Image 1 (cartoon, rainbow, N blue to C red):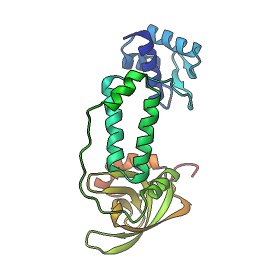
Image 2: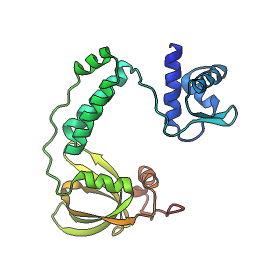
Image 3: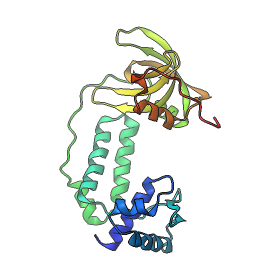
Image 4: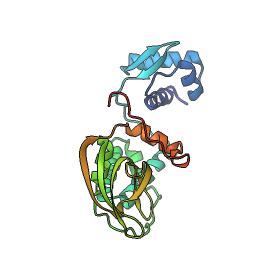
Length: 238
């Protein structure tokens, strides 16, 4: 690996960590000596990278620092292109447009040879299963997730029985035959999955729900639904 590739790898590793990470952890992840790691951090700082910290305490890349245009390995490029093509083929229309625009923007920053590689990449996305249309735009549901706002839903279950729900939306899942809103349901006092094609109506409340969406997602991933529902604790300051 060249020194320039090693420096870019270090920037990428730092960008993945939101909190200070020690030099030993960074050196182990990159497969270099601690001495080399410290030297590389000094080189990046001299080049203007916003890396804060010191030996023994840890290092963090200041939020908002933009990585320079990157070269990708063939596997990284294939993963990015395939993912963008999947979204462009399977997601809702705003997401499809965003995926096409993102792929075009990424391509414009690459060297000419890699731009040609993207155009000629033989990775195809096949047709998905037929999906019932959504009555509520997924764009609005995703906005509620970003803003951490409560949603008041009119929802029909598989048998067609309607119910009114106030939920705390925190994730959105894409499957071949359906899209799923993942939320904490105040009525059921537990995590529930709502098929978007069964949501008859959704109104976004001005009220922010009391738990951060990252905490809800962590509890859901940890299997709260299997251990008996526990009302999420409100985050401090909310």
